Image 1: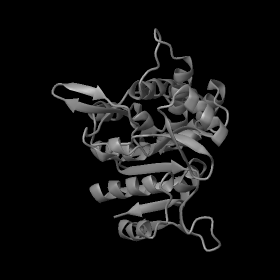
Image 2 (image 1 turned 45 degrees about the vertical axis):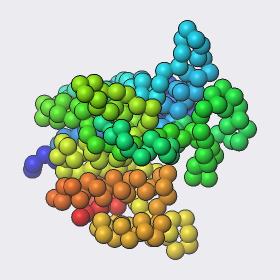
Image 3 (image 1 turned 90 degrees about the horizontal axis):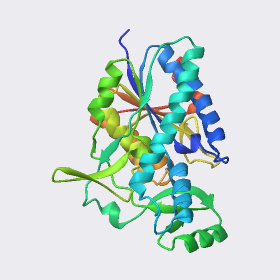
Length: 314
């Protein structure tokens, strides 16, 4: 059987839910590694991407709270790199432990990944990407005392989060490195947190005060490395229409044209399911012989055995 090249996009909220300690996040990643190891066991060439919304938001709060003239807070692009490093380190450890327990000899390595965006992207004028923890109105007022430049918005009915610019990815600077690793049998951890947003200026790459959506960055990487399958993991086993209503319906196999109609109906929430649907659609439209899947981490085994989850085809 020909080996499939599979990119699995893992959300930052799957790593950090309520306990922001390093210990809790590392335990979450050990649990995650158990699920994703199933791809390696069946011979797939695995590429892992991950979000970092909660982590980078918490780091920026810590940076702002401890900032002084002699030790100033780091900018967002650097904070993204820092969380790529910390989450990548935890993932390397978690997968290393699980691979050893399974008797599999395979290297896992994190790549500090830069993702190119356009300096003229209109997103820079219209911040929309929520990052960091969910806060109450009172907590927002306290946070703004620390840094009055921060902007907050209500997100998914769960509280308020800081919002920053979220330009669209146009290239993954290290995609050839990642592809070389895959061909050598190494599992790369890449485009963490959507990648470090950079704009090319002459011969320089300039970091930007922004956060790239992890799903769009994962799609771009999957396209560039010519993946056979893009799996976007979320909190539910399937994409639903009329979600949380009496007439909700789960989607099992769906075309991009059907999804476009559902988007026009306003079926998918902007801050959660919509970017996942749009990323999955973009992937199969750019790679017509490939497919995308949206499902949950806990449903991975059922997907591998029975095809459960929402499969998106052109």
